[in-house]
Length: 266
Image (cartoon, rainbow, N blue to C red; front, top):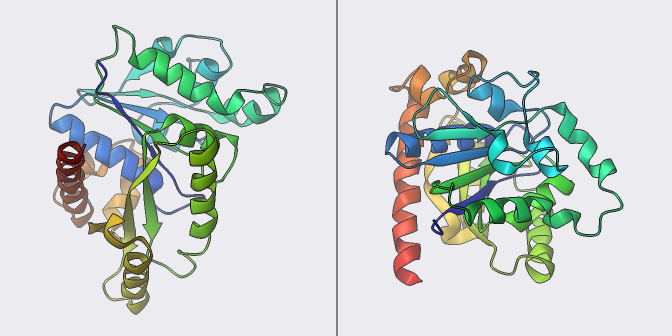
């Protein structure tokens, strides 16, 4: 199956709703009978625990895949959600940068593993989402090289746009050297507070800077969204009627519409 899309969700700032976006976009798509794989590429393992898996168990993780301890498919685990699987992560992954210091092709490690799997007979995923660490480390570079497109969650708070120029420069460098087809699929505004003038200002500035790349859907600041991870379930299951859930369903619909436009333009 060659239709598999690999999409990285990244921002080098932490606490912007990156993992929440991966978890809930993947869940909403799986509810629509689309087969989804999440790769947790953050040593903190928040996507792993956000799906209710334990990130300290002695199980195969993305670290084992990248250092050659196991095959890609051996690390794929079921979640409680039909059509949605995960390759988990834990703190072991933080040692990879030092361990691969002498490898010339290390930026391509993840890409090679994903490409080989996608071409195999056992792949039936429509989407592979990579949840990146909040930094511009080797792991993030690996995800940029492996992905076909990027979603950038952007917190609607002070300093949100700072650092984005650094991120876009990194993306441009990767495009020139390692992944010429990489595109920013979209920028998702998160933690929006309509009572706060600053949120609206960041919204305006982001749309000026990224133009039509910014999704119309904005994700509000919502208590249920922040509670769901501690229960090990996506907010779409934890409280499907809260404003956070409604906005992630709306974002998923926009994501799919965008896909139809991209396909017809290709």
